[in-house]
Image 1 (tube, rainbow, N blue to C red):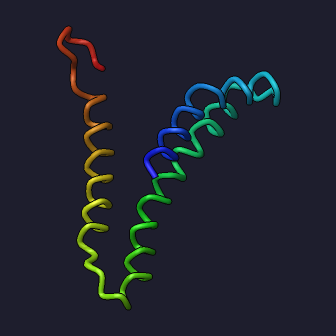
Image 2 (cartoon, rainbow, N blue to C red):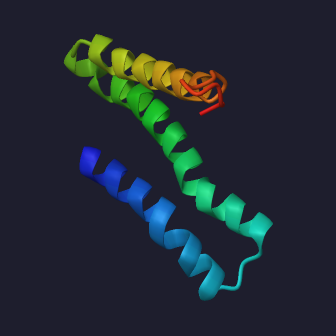
Length: 95
């Protein structure tokens, strides 16, 4: 799971923009949208994957707390990432 997430992130921030611009001739607005789309969709996949896992493992009586804990951890990480962008850095500039 982590390899796939890391590989997709690395591909989306390094190779995908160049490919879309040079090979497909995308403009700036299209490039911004289609480059970020896989990452945005991966958030929903991660969150709803936990809910699907809960449904599938319910008959097996598997403890669902680890799945929910992961869901909450993703929300907290997303919040802190966005919040960090608003806080001034050590030099007084926003990060």
